[in-house]
Length: 452
Image (tube, rainbow, N blue to C red; front, side, top):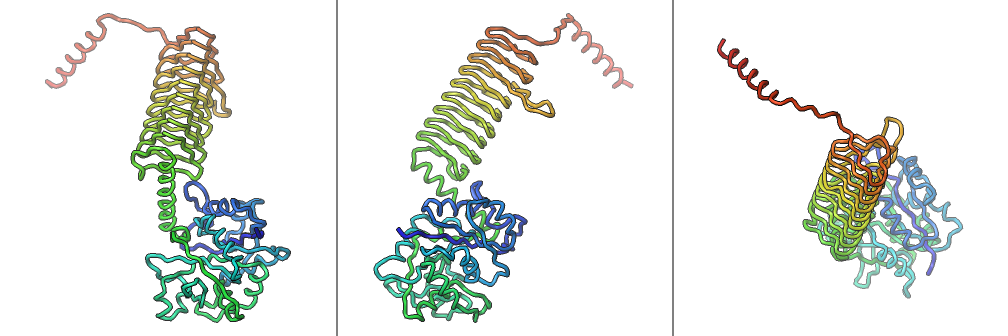
């Protein structure tokens, strides 16, 4: 295979997004749209990645780190001018160049590979263009091609004739060419058009004028070349991604009771025979093992759910929550940076933070691990088979031993030994007849006041 470099255009101001955050850093399924695209590119092992930046370049450079080179387009004089800015970064590169867009994050890896393969087909096209046929062609640029896919002409909508606008094959903007050809052609394009810009599409027209030919391949799924320029389009992209993820989850053996109400993150992993009830949200970093049940209205993020576990309904698992095989958290239970051992359970109304709960332990309703003293976090350790009675407060750092019992209503701030009972309550006073005398006195007084 010939090496390739990805040039990703991300210099636009993104004014329609109306945001201080750079457009391509807005998340889809909890991941910046640019990172969705980079992950697909990385799977093809590019030799180089160059991101063309402009407005908001500091944000992009910080987000990219050392994952890609950046080059500056200033001022922004069109897509052709943008790609030209990568020429210096690729001056010693002789492979293929694939031009992509940071706000078009769903181009598939197989589509990218098909473009590179087409570039090296026997007819040796000078440029390969990715086309698509949307339901509403609207203002997209058109690709005028013959039945073999050879491009006759490419034209922007504003510069197209009525006959050209009637063509349904549109230009996605994604292109591939050999590096030498790409920058030679870019050096010869002009800006004599309605926008006064240097259009990338004009490299096709220049190549045609040279007597060479260019080719188009069309994606069958227009959704993979959907551009995102506004909040509404961002929401539509999120919906598109979620629908695909739900279908993938069910195809891989998970049951979704009401698929349209379940929201996944970009990295959610579900095992076989997992059941997810309605209105469940998965944030980043969640893995759910085979046979687990995630019940309605639960929210999971940064959590690991073991085989055969049960979560919810109305449960919240925060980062660092680990449920080992067969454990259970019920309604209105929250876990954060805590391990719930095999077969252990916290059935309702409980907070487990910075805690380690042994196998088979039972955490009663209303139990709280008091892990924060206002300055530092502290750990609670609960041994195997321990029983924590309802409405208990465990003040960390504290250790509850194996098989120990903490009586309901206790506030425990000292360690409890294995097999020990710890009961911490105020003395219970009994005053026979006091309540009856109180009620009689109050009723009498009320009647006297009413009679005045």
